[in-house]
Amino acid sequence: MRNILATFLIGVLFLSLTPITPYSSAQLPTAAVTIECEPEVNGSNVMIDVEPGSDNYGSAICTVSNPTAYIEKVDIEVTSDVLSYSAPGSVYVSPNSEEKFTLGLSGQTAMRTDTFEVKVKATVSEISGLPPLNAASSEATVIAEASHYGGCSLELLDSVMIFPPGEEFYLNLKINNLGNGVDTFEISLDPASQVFLEESGFTLSLSTSRVQISPENPSKVVSIDIKAPSSLSDDYTKDGNFLSETFSLIINLESGTGCKNSDCDHHSIEPILILETDDSLTSATILGIDGDNNSMYLLSASVCIILVLVGYIFFKRS
Image (cartoon, rainbow, N blue to C red; front, side, top):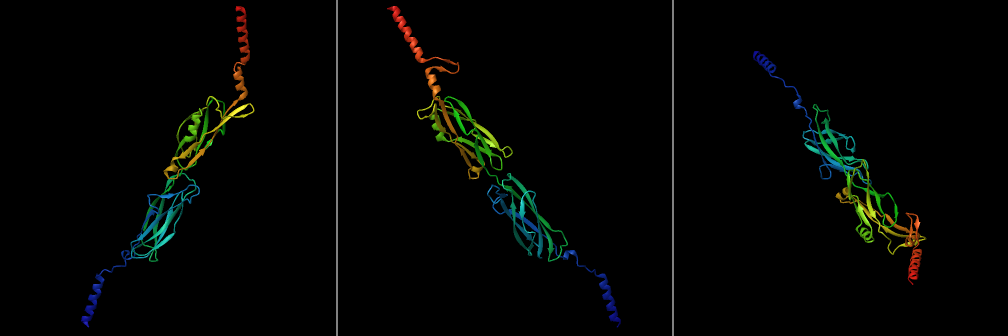
C-alpha cells in the first residue's frame, strides 16, 4: 500500500513538472494567397478599342493561388478610377491549387487615348469555413490602354471658285482630326488631275503637305496657291455674253495613325474651278475699249484716220 502511494505521489509530481503545451496559433490553419493578372491577348497592356462602332472592351486573366492545405474563400476587390470593370466578388480555392477568373475592362466610346492603372486585390476571408487568424492578401496591377485610332475629314471653305484668266488666288482647306489622339495628316493632290490642270496652264502649289493636329485643337487650315491660265482653251462653253471653262482638282487627305494600324483612313474632296470671262469685254478689248482709263478708241476709226492722212500726203505730193 505504501508503494502504491509513493508511486502515485511521484506521478503527480512528474505531471506538475511537465509543461502543458496549449493548442497554439502555430497549430491553427494559417491563411496565405497570391494573385497575378495578365492581358488575355498577348501584350504588356490590356488594349481597349474605343473607336466608334467597337465593343469598347478589353480583358485580363487573373490567377488566385492557395498554397495552404485548406480550402480558402478569397474576396476580390478591384480599384479603377476611369474604366468600368467586371469581376467576381469572391472565389473559392482548393488546397494547394489555383483558380482563374476574367477581369473585364470597358472604356467610353471615343475617349482620348491614354493608359490607366487598375488594382486587383485578393484577401482571404475564410479558411476551412472559419475566419482566418492572420491577415492574408495579395495585389496585382493591370495596365489598360485606350487604343489610339485615326480619323479625318477635309472641308472646302469655298465650294466653287470662279475666276478670270490669269488670276492668282488661294483655295483654303480645313483639315479635321476625328481620331482620339495627336495625329499627323498627309495632304496631296491627285497626280492625274494635277497633271491635267498644269497642262491646261494652271500653276499649283500646296502651302504644306503634312500637318500635326491634336484633339484639343482638332482643326487646321491649309491652302493651295493657284494661278489660272492666261486664256481659255477651245473647249469653253458660252452662256450669253459669258465664256467659261470648268476644271476639277482632287485633293486627298490621309491619317498617319490609321495607316500605322494597317487601316488607312482616307478622305478626298473635288473642288470645281471655273475659268470665266465676259465675251463683251473681250470684244471691247479687241475694239480698243480701255476700262481702266475710261477711254475708248475704235480700231476702225484709227484705220480711217491713217487712210485719210495717207491720202492727204499723196494729194499734196501730186
